[in-house]
Amino acid sequence: MRLIETESTAGPIHPSAASSRFDLSIVVPTLNEAANIPTLYASLKTVLDSIRWELVIVDDNSKDNSPALLVEMANKYDNFRFIRRIGRSGLSTACVEGMMTSSSPIIAVMDADGQHDETKLMEMFGILASDQADVVVGSRFAEGADLTTFTSFRTKLSLYSNVMAQKWFKIPLKDSMGNYFMLKRPVIEQAVPKLCGRGQKLLFDILVVSQDDLRVAEVPIVFGAREHGESKLSYIAAIDFGLQILDRKTGSLIPTKVLVDMFALLGFSALTTMFIWTGMKLSHLFFGFYFYAPYLVPIASVPAILIAFEGQQMVIPKRKRSKGAAQIRDFFSFLAITIPFILLSMYVTAAAVPQGDPRLRHLFGASLVCSLGMLIATAWRREVTAKR
Image (cartoon, rainbow, N blue to C red):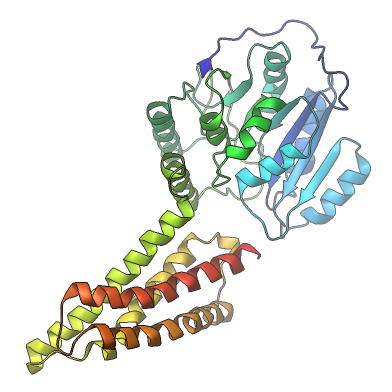
């Protein structure tokens, strides 16, 4: 991968791919951005008046008036299209779906919230149209960029992430973690089969899986303030990025989802085992005998079940979390799935652990059965919430 020094193109740009309907497709993932979409379209119309362009909105089933607005704008403008995704979510997959529905030789990705500097689009387009690079990034950290509206915490988080990308994955860019970039169609066509499809760092994912001779360039941008709505940045994004890094480091050997499930199974088992062992030790300390291990399994499973349920609740996006009575129903459904495995674990414990035997290795083996139920319940809830 090579970082290219580019020159501004003087005069009008004349794209060579005249066979395509549009010179540029701009893909924008949205979630409850109805107040921003018309403003974005108007801004694009102003800055892209010299080329043929289209705006492709990929909306993850917004709960504001986005659905009606998208239909209205698609009927009004020939260069406005949208995809409304039901039962699917995620910034990276939304962008990829939008890019794959376009036919333009050059594709851009940006946000709808006004933070990405649309006035740089023509400069980025000129670099690609003149074949100076294959990918151009609207950089928040290149010389000349303005991050006045960026909080100190977000600046540090982004800088650390970019340093990680530079050292671990040999990406020469100062900013490979943003969601404002433009590329030639062959780049995404070649990258799509290898993308992990996780998290919000699509640009990073594309760069990691692309060919070594990829030419990349950066254009400094003014990072603006959000005009309407709420930021989607949260600790879930950090978790997703961590899993994305894990996928890139281990995905070729063990899929990330399998690895996470393995750790969860071992964690649930260890927790259940320690509660059983603690109960047996306390009974011996106070009463002089070891309590029968199978009878402790249901009691010991309760803390593990609560932690598994609440832990998953924390990583579910806010808009998909159940609340009040719905959350209680979710918990009892979760519990109902685990109960048969708790009963089976009691049976296995009775067969595998002799009376008065507090050895951890025996208790851990029996607890694996109970933990398998928690893992299945977690997978069930993950699928249910994904469809909300």
